[in-house]
Image 1 (tube, helix red, strand yellow):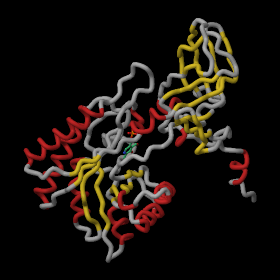
Image 2 (cartoon, protein in one colour; image 1 turned 120 degrees about the vertical axis):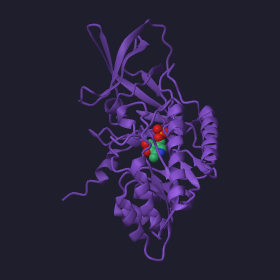
Image 3 (tube, protein in one colour; image 1 turned 30 degrees about the vertical axis):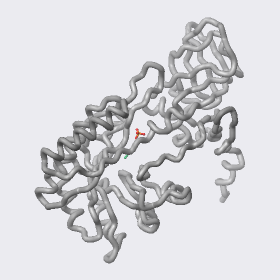
Image 4 (cartoon, helix red, strand yellow; image 1 turned 135 degrees about the vertical axis):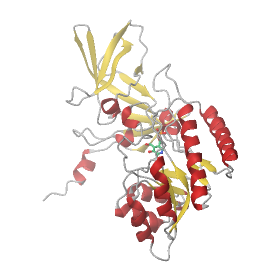
Length: 366
Ligand SMILES: Cc1ncc(COP(=O)(O)O)c(C=O)c1O
């Protein structure tokens, strides 16, 4: 299995959001040359090491995801320091492509987040810490959202909260980060979020809401994730076995849940197609399965493939640029795939395939 992506483009973003918080990711981002002062660090739980690294590297803003972080960050900053922070709020909006990627309501995993009714208490505590400078509020309501409306509802609630903070504390918050979750189409005919409409309508809602509340319009930020890199990648699998059992055709490939756990985790459906040779055979309905032992290692159920699909064929799965290689594991251990960058007929390998030596090198013995 391999992943092909076009050469990386350096996005001209203002900030880089690092979620979830991880010392390794922070360090990698700094090593890659991204200015730490333009980084925003998230995470529903941050280890002492993550916080220490964030402060040492000079991360621009830390998003407080749980009230228990307030004292920890303030203590880590020290009496003479000052750190910019934002507070993550659960706006009570349910949106997203699957229960497991909906994060906007407080019955989800990230339960410690301050609900909007409890958010004021958290904000009061942050404002009371001289080491912390509250620059604004943050929310992320879920992933694979294809409708603008949940964002507008969330934004209205966030503006309402900003007005209450101003009324209660006289604090005017200069930033509002609405998170990501911008849905993309994985299969032909699936809906995708209209980003132009999202930008236009969020901006209009913000200006209108702030004007009604007598607030200065804050700097609006969004955190696109898969919408940037998802469509840029194609996963390539080699067919190893084709098995006909009664009406069913099972096509087993040289990858599976070790390179893409999302179909098994939360039912993502992908659209493999034959590449590398033309076929005029009548289509058959096939189930593309991985090489792992779990019955749930199914990459695509009941998809149309040419009836003469055979071992050695290549299957391409589009929209594999996000949450695939990054979620690949050492399970079984098949070895994580290479990344091939393709541009105008030339190819290079920015990330090589994981080898047996890579796997062995971690095994340091007794
Ligand atoms: C805080 C935060 N922002 C942005 C994103 C990006 O989400 P997506 O890739 O669905 O746009 C995530 C994903 O989990 C997130 O947790």
